[in-house]
Image (cartoon, rainbow, N blue to C red):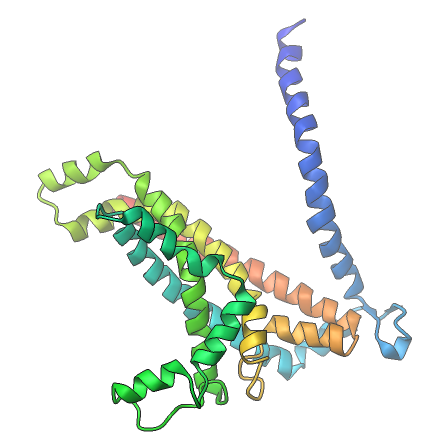
Length: 301
């Protein structure tokens, strides 16, 4: 047996072992995406008796002039940017706190992850009660602290409704980011901080020059997951506002759901999914490149 055959044998074994996972990915991801992309070039609704009729780019032309889609896309973008930004800031601070040595740290870490582990639909119901304008806890606290004079109809007005769903999402998913960042913090050697302090660096300088650059991989992973999840948010907003009031919190996933499941317009719904998917990929690529470049600059300076 020659050296080349010895090298190729482990590679063949690796491909054989990876084959089930590759097939699973094709079945779970590739086929549905390909099917959706194919269906977006057809008209399939009640007008065609739910039979696909080739229509070329008609669905995409219709989408460009669909003001409801672009309003939902705007609402989705606002929700995603604000909620994920707040989650990153809070998650990083919580991770830094949980990384310290204190009595009962393991118990606190367990409690901190509970909001993320709870079912989203139940969380939506709880926050729906909290933000109720008649007997909600949130209004009651604001009135007692004299921040407001009368109760706010949080879920019945456009801007307060968006604030309410963002608060609920931040409360639920911040632990996800904090746990990922905490794992990254624990992987940073303590010797780096000790050496840096010997050179006269203060805690803020150590954070900016050591902690933040070394956390960039974990930050990228956490934000990529959260960007995809927040952009595809459905259950929380569906339970809390149903997309209202007046479509103020209607995100793309809710609009797509209504198009496909309520109006049975499968072809146009497929085009909504394709465009949203492509826009999300572009946003994630730009965001990842920008964040990695920022990380490289931190290493340099």
